[in-house]
Length: 363
Length: 260
Image 1 (cartoon, chains in turn brown, yellow):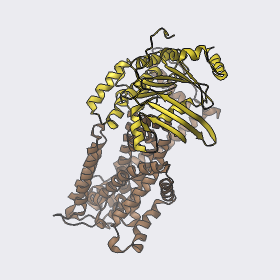
Image 2: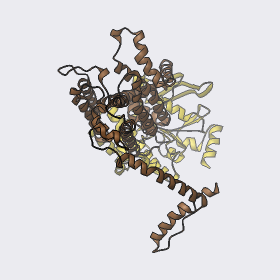
Image 3: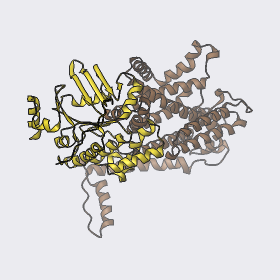
Image 4: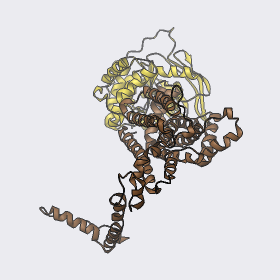
């Protein structure tokens, strides 16, 4: 263990700073035999991996040539495939002539998300704005009222991922709050109901819930009563997210000292106003890291709907890869899809970080 | 510490006026533990009561029964002519008329001082924001910290926080204020600023019930001192009588301990 401890860098003499910095890094890298060995090992590893990676990613890659032939002969990545197939990757099997509709939907959702993260726009009218936007989104996607109708089985790609993410989490969050409060209720019926719901959802894999929603429900329900497959998957995702969020929020609620409830009660604030004005803002603030964690997992969980035959980003990618004209550049496609998921998740992580910092220091 | 030469005028009392608080045959248990035993206490409007006694004597529990932070199991509590029952709506109305100041301040840490003060006036009294803020600033000036209106509770000293808590109670224009050991959690140098605020409040004629061990404060403002031990009211008298001629052995013992 002793060999692992880094030697303290020597104090640089005045006027020797640059040399000192050099010496310090030399000491860090080669100061002890173990450090020297590790440095050499990682050096060899970097030399062995970085140049081939760069060659594949950029130098030997087909960047712009739109013909599939170039990709067949090239030794590097086939980025032109991503460009040529971008429509299919982003919008799946949505009818070609109507692709402007999902494109608008994606832009609308991203613009609304960007608008919603500004503290200045946090007001009840933001919720109303989202409601109106969702109506517009479903009209654009599904059609009717003057637009060609497109069944949900033809939806695909980025809009599906975005709608599932935004709606499932947007609905699951308030439902999760209610479940968390219900689980702490003094009324036995409400508390037990919440416990049963949360524990059964947590006890099942998301995949099995999705299967129940999409494959087993049609066996029990007459067709007239059966909601659309997309809606069923959406409900399954929402319930799943709500159960997890409920437990995270309950953790936050438990951190609030009893004195806060007493102070609110002594002022004559009724139950719901106490929760809304005093308790929840503090509980959610405390729970932000865990909430962000759960929500990021949920963003990525939306891709599991592919198992029940909905075309999210990943299924659209697989469908695009099936084109026999192209040499099936799977790594490039999944890197592209991965980059989209990363952009969504990382943006959300930054937002959570901002919220965490913004809160006043607690008790 | 506090001048006992201050002149105390007994509150004007109209005999037809209902008392502010009336507790009759009130009992409370925690499970099998009998916390409050047959409490009978009438507090008139404008009266200032100091409640003292050893820890665990039930004094905090008793005043917490008055705004039903604790439920009693037997007997009657009538506040401003309304008997406390399980009716939640009615309890919220009564609570909005009773201010309470806690040992640990219990300010809302996620809100600014001004928001702490305007929260209940806006959401319980349905006051307009502008008017609520005006009232809040008025009381912040009275507790001498108007310059802290836009800071958060965590940035204030204990004494400042407790003065904000008093201002928060006052913003609801309560008929009664309950103080539950308001200076016990304070550093010694901050006790005076809070007591001075309470003395000023007493001089304005507020009905006050104060659980405290500050005997100087009791001498200065109390109309009556209530001494409790083991869940009972053992003795109740004017401060001068209580301090100079305690009648019960338990009171004598308590005074001997606390004054030395």
